[in-house]
Image 1: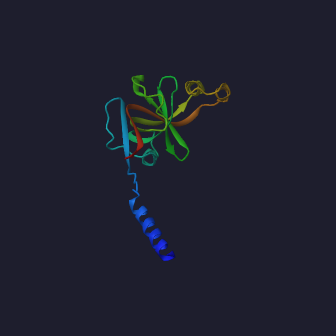
Image 2: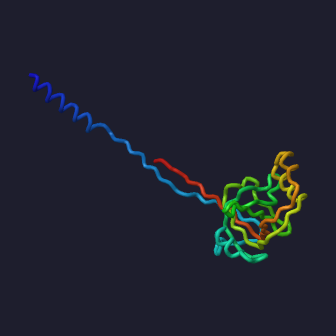
Image 3: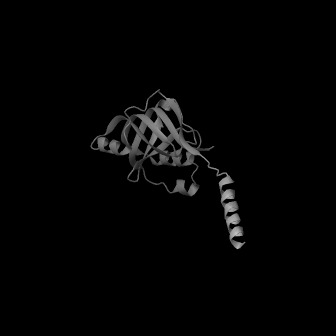
Length: 171
């Protein structure tokens, strides 16, 4: 009798396991790319990296180029300038030719493709303070600026801002 109960229990257990539906969730991922263009209509084709830019710029006063780099900061008041990350703890301020166009104020963290002229420039104390005011820096930070800076600058005739988002879909 014990054997019969054991066999019956085993059959019921196996039957229950086979009847349970195993649910599988299929998850797919895709990248959604959003592109906005500002200023002159340019393409991404031929854009160089920041490292390539630094290598090409070496020994020159200016360079007409197209490059792609991450945006660090954008003017919080109008979007009338931005800084891009060149790596090696170097940033470059990008302004827009003839003040003809602006970029979205929330573009920081996205990638920019910029086309125009790069140069080494001296930025005056007054201009540095103005940039800090535009970036909504504290008065303490603004007052701390006492000397001009020599740095890279870029006057863009056209800008593409590219944002890539990973979209996960469950089915």
